[in-house]
Amino acid sequence: MSHVKRIGMLALAALVAAVAACEEIENPVDAGQQIGPYVRFLSNTAARTPGATSQVLVIFQLPTRVEEDVQVSYSFGGTAVLGQDFVPVANAAGAPRTDVTATGGTAKIIYKFDDTNFGADTLRLRVPTTATKGRTLEINITGAQTVSSNRTIDVGVLDRLKRFVLTIS
Image 1 (tube, rainbow, N blue to C red):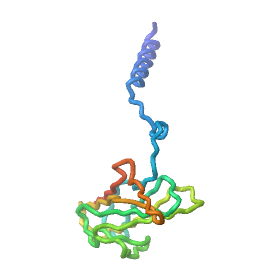
Image 2: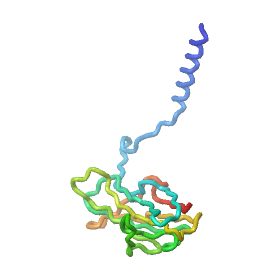
Image 3: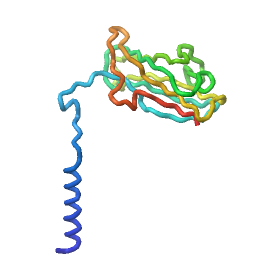
Image 4: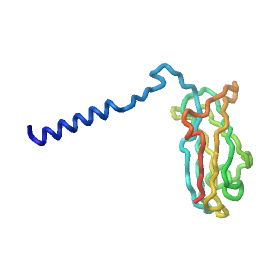
């Protein structure tokens, strides 16, 4: 038997062994489990350098369809200080928001009948020049419910997407 054939057979044997050793991951829907609607962060981290126009977009996402508006409650934690290290703003121009406190606030995901995208709302934060490098802002989703019927919505199936961390670099 040639060396090429031996190498090929060994590679095939290794591949078969590797596939046999893999853990099968089961899709919960295929297994008959129902996953209800839930909210999450689109991403879970960001880093920003302090600056006059430095902003970060924190996106709350509803990746399952709910046919009414959903209100998402969130809390702030970490070492960053509201007003010094981060400022919630209403738009890219930096107009201040007054509905967010030092402890957190709410986001509202608006239901749109003809929209085929996931529902989302954005918390826009400015990192001003007064921000202290090395501080962090943790934003945690604390709850969600539909606005009209007060139906409780889960806060994600993945723990890592229930919390967003902004690092001031």
